[in-house]
Length: 206
Image (cartoon, rainbow, N blue to C red):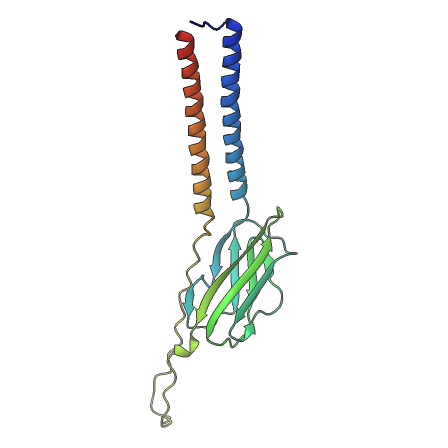
């Protein structure tokens, strides 16, 4: 039966641990990459909320990010049935970007397309939508003019749609998946290293 020398045993041990160390370093690099990618700026909320239906025309679009935004590269374009409805440039205040809108917006579907750059230089771009249906509000009743002494109810104000903040971007889901994958790979690497060490010890014992 072949009995490895001490030198051969030492070489095997070094090779095994080098392989395990390489696997663990690879996993560590994946974890660092995943965390670094998720550290970039992401959209937190938008008003009007994505997919919302409004009965009162908004006067502005407000985007809130999780990091400060550079004032030099913030672009927000809002388009509807009649084309672009934004007025002036987008205003940046820290992590909040505001785009003013024209008055008298027509009913229909509006798309908000934005592209911003965070202070760390990471670009972020995406689109959201909202629906305007202002003509669905109650109109004043036509008829005889009420006398001065009579009191008639004033037309009810248009109900304003509740604009819930948009849910955080799917970055949280992506972060969970990447970190979960990194942890899984780390576990596999550790298990593989343990199996190799165990097999080496069995060979030595035999």
